[in-house]
Image 1 (cartoon, rainbow, N blue to C red):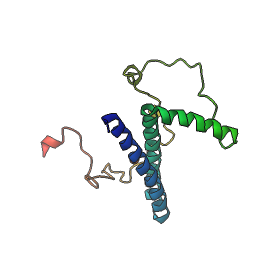
Image 2: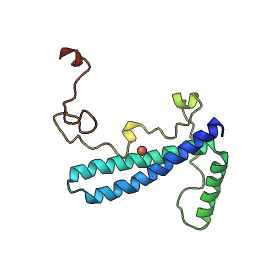
Image 3: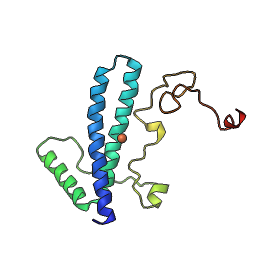
Image 4: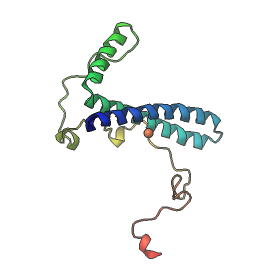
Length: 149
Ligand SMILES: [Fe+2]
């Protein structure tokens, strides 16, 4: 198997795990009593949904047959009235060059922060301590704080 084919296999494996993760997190949310914690997990779950879209986009950019089948299946779903997606993406919008586009990459995954429909929830610890990761519970410090200890 060549390197590009292996890349596709990896992307498909990640897509599979992202979908499984969404299912797992939704089950976990049902078990959590603390509403703030539920909010955090719901946000993380939404990030997994973004990962699903990102992985699928990357797969379609690398697998022409997948892309062809995706277009064909969209049409089939439309014929069966099982989707409300438009037949074609909105046309006519001239796009300004972006760094991603100039590098030959799709920028369809980029969402400006101001338009993020799922902004992160406020931190659990309002004193500025980390709420996740290895620094959990420790106050965040600026770059010049490291040398002062
Ligand atoms: Fe993920």
